[in-house]
Image (cartoon, rainbow, N blue to C red; front, side, top):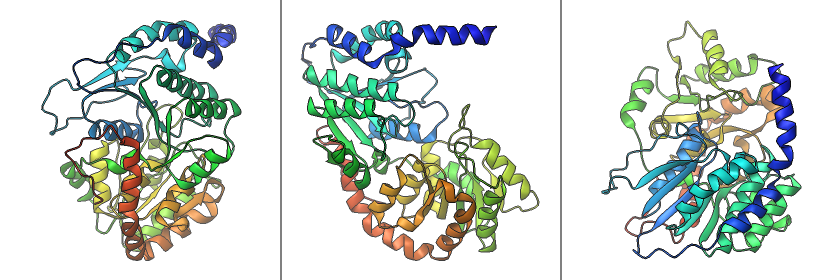
Length: 419
């Protein structure tokens, strides 16, 4: 009975979830604010979903680290993000969280309720950024993608610097999301694509202008070596980091994943099984735990039984020799340290990442997990040193591309270099 009531509520509210209706409300109610008078920068950033996702946390932290001035992070819930400590920030309270559950994800009624607080944040804003990641092309639902683009467009129309940062674009975007991003770019929103394939697809879909960029996590600085050592020192070196995404089941059940770990162990690597996302519907922990149980007698295969911070993950990737992952941001945080990362391709976002580094062989299609993942992991472990040299040769160029997200926003007193 409760399920039927919920379904009825969803059906009745569907017309109120129309992105067009929500955008019309924004045009009427979001008006040009008075320009800031104190000269202090204030960046408003719309975060991705967060809540049990290390990659989303890493994206928000990278934004905070790379802009100058105050930051307001718009999220869904107060618990979705943990504010990082930044030793470079002398002023307490530089960053604040602004939970607005319905600004992007709700219906018109909830959106209007949140719009007042968003409008108040814009009064002193010198920029508005949407962290685009993989949520702009409608692959995870067209409404939220379209709402993000429409919101950025409206802010740009108000004369505020508006941009969509470092996002992927798949080969078959939802037409409604495509049209919204296309119109946003036409109305002055800076659109930064994070890999060359995504940029080419976006241009083919009529999005113009497009900035060729890279993922903003390549600019993250913080590394928690102590937390990393607490895990890495428990297994033999050389270290292999292995992540199995709970979002992408493999044909063949558990066996293809067990084979990955066995290939790495046969080559003398200690293996840390590292979850990257743990939330309902996309939890890496159960799969990782099931694989670890197959190696219960092997002390050099260890399950990391909770989500670590992005800084701790970067501490691990700095120690690793090879990574195998179903999550793209674990690949990013490995590549930024010159570590080859075999990555399962989802949503069209991995092929372009590997193109940036000239390592297409590190990309494994989802339908080839059972047949190819273990073999590619083995080959990568055998050639890790050569691959690392190839990756390191591209790092400065990729870092420069990532920096294009922050032109006009970045701290002038700091130069970012590759590691």
